[in-house]
Image (cartoon, rainbow, N blue to C red; front, side, top):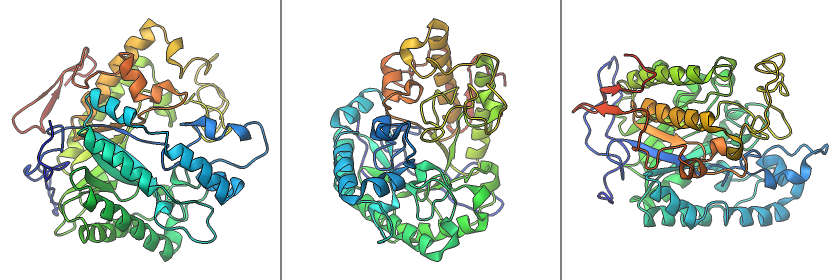
Length: 437
């Protein structure tokens, strides 16, 4: 049921020096789902990632091409051909049927990643534009099916993390030129104008996705957050502003002190496949680690409203090109960056990301893992699964997982775990069988 258009994503949140109690009292509720965000990312639409839609990159497989991201995709094809292919992609990757399905699955939000180049492109950049009409179409469908949307600035000039999902893989140069910061703000102003026009649908803007602290100055990130806040507020006064934890513990943001800030939420991302300590866990270990995540999220949420903006069911990094176009996996030892050999002797990627290859115990585990993670992230302000769908990687495909009973449908249909909320909502008691509090 649609709530009043003015009832947005999360309550007003005040950043105050020395605050160590719960966030400010709720004055508003999440747009369509009460006090909990339950959503998915529409990844791969406006920022290309080879592993999400391999068919876009398949022509370069096995060649000496350096096509690895959207920058090199367009640079190699040329602007005319790139624009032609991307218009076809933009018009088909997210369909009205997809949005209707997400609503039927009981979700209340979508997070929409988009790159700065949708708003500003320099002459020496290969990117093409034309994304905005397709974004507006997605927002129209989002409105029609009673969902809310978060607009996420997923890539900024110079790259904030060097990942392919920033638009340009390689060096982290975002803070190396003031022009990069200025153009990032310009893109945010473009997003704010869209948010203002779709104020009944867009209830939040994320000011930059995953700024990598190992290549950036924290003070520079904070300064950018301050400037982004002011720029957005001047255009969309009531929209929620989302800041990312920059791969720092969210606890490191507890002392953020910006007088006058409100309606701000912290985004943290939790995956089990990109670091050795998680990748090598047993199935029981994944569940128990998720219990610890729940305790951490609950603690963080008492200082800053915290949402888990990305998570998945993957326990291997076997999805084709997940680690970059043409690259292998840590799991089977074909990506030897962090491990000398596979996770264990004989580890194989065969069938790991294909739902048709999963036996009954694997299916049971994935359902348990989904419920445990939902419990954990609902100890905070909620979650966005990555991704709404994929071409090949089923452990990252929310729609397919939910339709096959491996993710609760609706999300509250928990078989293995239950969460309970006391009257203040924020004191969550996890009843997952793997959590002992």
